[in-house]
Image (cartoon, rainbow, N blue to C red; front, top):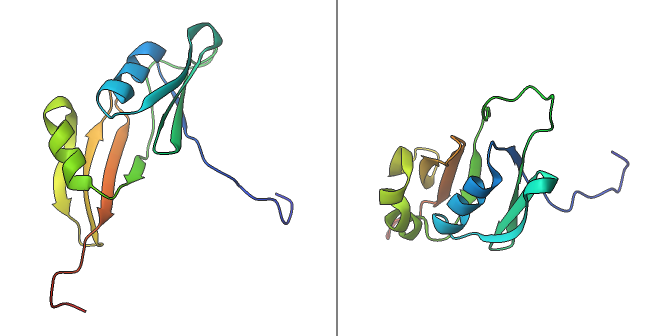
Length: 130
């Protein structure tokens, strides 16, 4: 990358077998807004709080049977407990909300395609601590 060139954003592009299913999950379950759904164009985009995710149907001939992803998508939030309470009964939970040793309060779920989504915020220092 040339010196001085800036990365102005990162938008994950996830391969999915069905665009409508992916968009509906993120809109109905996680409160995203659908910006674009172009089944003939093999592409869709959802946005929430200024952040976007894109979904794509793999092109014919590409080796794709089901989504594969060795990592996760981590969402930082300011109200992790409120999100957890609102969605926990509607999602496939990977791990429930908890305070982690590394200073985050978080939970993990699997989306409709099996992608791991984590939601977290820093654990607040308790009163009396420095």
